[in-house]
Image (cartoon, rainbow, N blue to C red; front, side, top):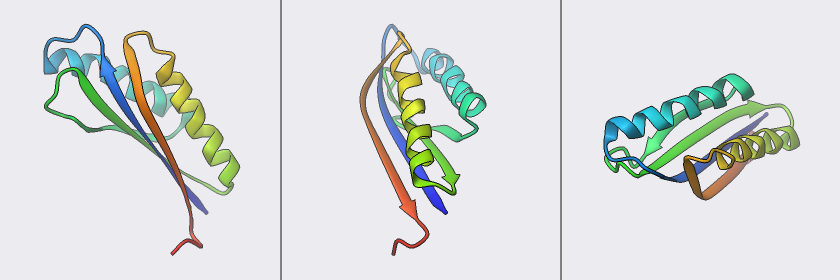
Length: 98
């Protein structure tokens, strides 16, 4: 079993309030969940209106598939014109890791 995580650090474009931020992030999180069947949520920078962190996680029986799904999630977010992807971090753990 492999557990993968993806942390996305985002800069939002023309956003002037936390309400606008939530309106921009919520559809992205929903699309990640729907399209890739992963768990996704806004995980950081909750009080900053132009910055956001999205966390994505999944469990897979294959490390390669785990990385490919997470890379696809990263590409989907990077392609959104209203978001600027500052950094992405992918981690994959095996149940053999200690």
